[in-house]
Structures are given as C-alpha cells and as structure tokens.
Image (tube, rainbow, N blue to C red; front, top):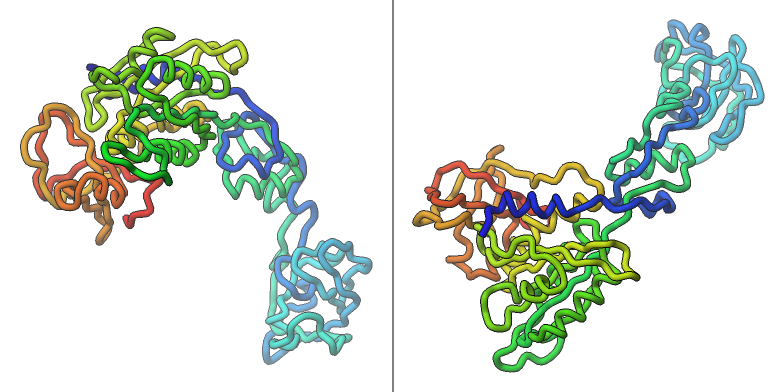
Length: 424
C-alpha cells in the first residue's frame, strides 16, 4: 500500500503526451495546440469605422453642438466590404457603415446619434439626404478603429501548449487559418468486470447489479477530453478479462477496468495484469477506492504503442469515481498536453464534523456553496441520504487527511467538481 502522492507520481511517470494531428481549426475545440500560430496580417487591414455614421474632417466640425450644428454635403455612402470612391474634402462628409474603410481625407466618424439622422429609422434612410447636420465636436481619430487594432501582424494568436477554446477559434478564423496542429485526443478502452453485472436496460434478477461504472467512466473520459471505447463486460474468468484487455490494447492509448481489484477469489485484474505486463501498484492509502491497481502492458503489433497504461479502478461507484478524479484525470490531462495537472482547490468552512480520526486519508463527496464571499462545505451527506444519493448530489470532494478530525467551523481544502451541476 503506497501513498496517494506516490501513486500519482508513478502514474505520471508512465504517461506520455500523445502525438500531434492536423485538422480543421473548428474541430480543435478542447485540444491543445502543438504549434505556434502567429498572425500574418493586421486586423483590420485598414482604418475602419467603429459606428454607423459620417466620415468627416475634424477641422470641419470644430465648435459644432446641438445649438450650433455644422452642415456638410454628403458625397457618397460607404459600406463594409467596398472601398470608398471619393475623397472627403472641406465641407463634405461620407455616409459610412460600421466596419467600412475610412474615406481618404476624413479623420473621424460622427455617429448617426449625433446628427440629424432620424432616430427611429430601421435600415436605409429613404429620404436620401443630400446634407447632414453635425451636433458634436470630435478630435482626430474619434470612432475610428486603426489598422492592426484588433490583431497586429506577428502577434502569437495561439502559442504552442494553448488549450483551444471558442475565443481562440474566433481568432484563428479571423486571420484565415484553416487548419491547426494539436495534440490528439486519447482513446480509452473501458471494461467492466464481474459475473454479477447486468447491462443497463435489461431486467435485474436477484443477486445482480447494473453496470453503472461503465457509463460513469465513459462520460468522465469524454468530459476530460478523451474518446471512450466501451468494450463491454469481462466475466470472472482469466481468459475473458485477458481477451477484453487485449482487444482494448489494439485500439486504445489507455485502458480502464472497474471491479475485480480487491482480494477475493474472483478478483482477477491484478492477476491478469501481472501475467501479461507489470503491476506498478495495487493499493493506495486513501479511500474509498483504496484497492486500485495500475500497470503497464505491452502493446499489440497492430496497436499504437509499445506499452499501454491500465487502470484497475474500484468496483463500488464511490471508490470508482474517486479513483478516476484523483488518478485518471491527471493522466488524461497529461496525455492531452495540458501542463496544469493539479486539481483546483478552495478553502471552505466546514458546516459539520467528521467524528473520529481517519486511519488513512479519506475522500468524501461533499456539497460546496458560496455565501457572502466565503465557501461553506457540508461533509456528511452519506450519513443523511446514503452513499449513492450523496454522490449524485455532490459538487465537490473533500480529502480528510490521515489521522485528522474535522470540527464544524474548521477551514478545510475542498476540490470543486467541474463535472457536477450542483450549485456553488
């Protein structure tokens, strides 16, 4: 039995960042950039108008106001995507739309709201005015977006190692970048074990249990950026488990099993892992889910890797999910090329107590909420509503260190769960 910290270190020592792939930029959401992307143009490429209004010379409207408007002749209308045809000379103005290139000779833009433009019009001005009255004085540059004011040529739009989100996608599209090199998503084979398991949707006979872990593991793999491949249920026979693991090794970057890692006569995961590979560790000093195995097996000749990590997670759902969040989550993030592997932590005030000293570190599914700028955490959901109900309604994990107690009012470290929809 090793500490959680040592177990995590061994997992990460046996985890490599996956290779890159190049794909259409809009398909890269949630992946990590494997290249530096710099803007090769200025955006906007020319000075453009910020609002809809009139491009004018600031010298022509000096001293203009509501009581002393300046009247200018309208020489043309400039729309976005079309270049101006005429130069703004003294006494003239160009009617201009948002995003349009500024006319030569103009050095500011007066908003429609600061002219005699009808305030309630929608669409074109059907009166087709020949002149405009200006009610405001502006300086040079007012309401003009300068060339390069959005992105300058050479700016690192997407540095290598950047997690791609909607704003990065928008920036890539803005500079016309069609593809991007990213670290590919890890493919994870998911295997349940146990003769007692029944697939969800089928009748449940006495002594049987629904296979809930596969659904939970697959959804968490997807949540953390992986691609789950459900391999089904391995029965409590060495050959059945061996075949499932070997099938997974042909298609996956990692394998996750659930159940079969304790010390019972039919707990075969460690036995099979030891026969076909190496068991790196088989128990950790943290519960629930202390009986968790991690090992490495050789990849098949048709697979992607020479060696493949295998997690044997606990069978009971609370332990299985704790194992995933504390060990598998950082494994997936590292494979994806994400540098920040530590789980976010907040300090919260305990709303209740944990009686007795823990013989080992213990993880509780807890309920975290924020009131008056402070976090508060309820620790004892299990005792009040049961283990599965508490897990279903939890939005955080709280680790009670070995040998410690927690009293109501104590400040404790809490790990918010970003896959929970519970209020915080």
